Length: 197
Image (cartoon, rainbow, N blue to C red; front, side, top):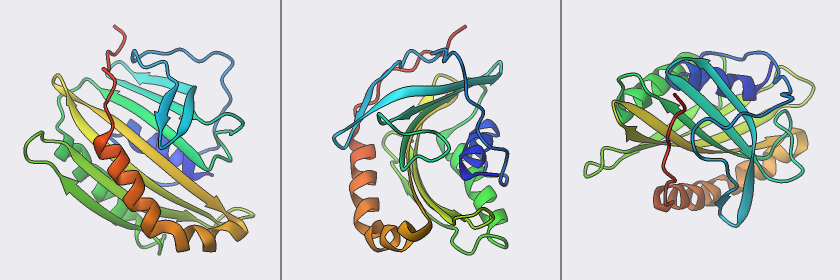
């Protein structure tokens, strides 16, 4: 069970963290379906499209990794998701928050903060998760930027992780990392998202 599959399951249910899922399964072919083939440049790093999923007719997910990183051991990942069903950025953020609250009894590291933009209706939710069920503990921090997309929503997100002995240093850098990443995500010129028919 990995946090990556949790993240994937989270966005499948309108970005709801529902628990730890199964390990990522490698894809032979990555089918770009949102009109965002990448690479995506974020804070000086280039993220290439690495994984896609279209599990329901109204839901699309794409993950992007820096060169040399793998989905089951990444330290940085960018994500673009789209849901064409009726939803709002705040509604999606509320669903994610409910999932995080539900996770608190089994994950003492869960913490989150929300920033809302009343002028655009966008929401940025940043949150911390952990997993100590494997051979090495994992600490994962995410920032999700929810935007309106027609009758649905688009999600642009950055995820950062540390494993094992690197967790303590990650925690020491977390305050500055949060500030830098949230600012960059808020100011990012978002590419147009056009879900495939």
